[in-house]
Each structure stands twice: as structure tokens, then as C-alpha cells.
Length: 166
Image (cartoon, rainbow, N blue to C red; front, side, top):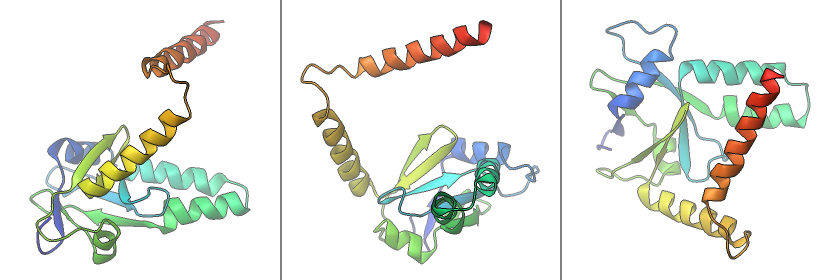
């Protein structure tokens, strides 16, 4: 991040932003939505225009009540639309830089998450990831093998495929 709060967005993420913006045309700068609510402790989650539109549609269809209010706060009210500049940089407003505890010249970790990506202060990311992993592993048996997660997911996928054929 430079002194003006500009962050370079990796090219593969820029291509995904372009592909998932129904209004984007060649020569335009892509747009994205940055989620900064407390649902991602210490990081920012970035959504494409298409993903944000889908999220807003889901929230709009929810029954009125505390779940909808919470979803509105996290996924709609705590977002900011940002357009990249001609060099593929996004300007992070001061409140987002403060959330990540970023300083001028600091590197930002960008982590792809399927339909979204995250931006983190690398030190915070490592602390959060280590704490989360340690907590999860402590809840597992001593002989826990992480490969078992893949096996369980594979079995679930195969069951769903089989049910679709029946």
C-alpha cells in the first residue's frame, strides 16, 4: 500500500472482478465491494458485483427479524463499493486502513476464497489463522488426520450425486 492508500489488486482477481460485473466493458475499470463488518475479524472480504447482487437478493428475501437485521449490517450496510484505477489499484479509505492496522508501504496479503477474496495485514492474518487452527485442532481427537475432512466432503458429494440420479 502506498502513502495514498492505494493497493494493487492481483491480476487474476481483477479478471474475476471484470468477468463478474454485468456492466463491465473492455476499457472500463472493474468495481468491487469491500465488506468490513465484524464477521471477518481483522480482515476485509471483497465481493464481485455479481456476488454482492446475489447476497443482497438473498437478504431482501429474508423474513423481517433479527437474522435479517444482522445480515443487513454485515453484508449490506458494512460494505463499500470501490472502482479500481487504470493501473489495477484500489484506494482503501482511511477507516479500512485503520481496520487492518495498515501503514504506508506495508504489504497486504490477498487470499482467494472461491467467489471472493480477502485482504489482510499479514501479521494479523497469521495470528488469526494460527489461533483458529489451534482452537479447531484442540477440539479434535489426538489422532485426527486433516485428510479425513476431504474424505467426509467427498462422501457427501458422492451421496448428493447419487441422490440426483435416483
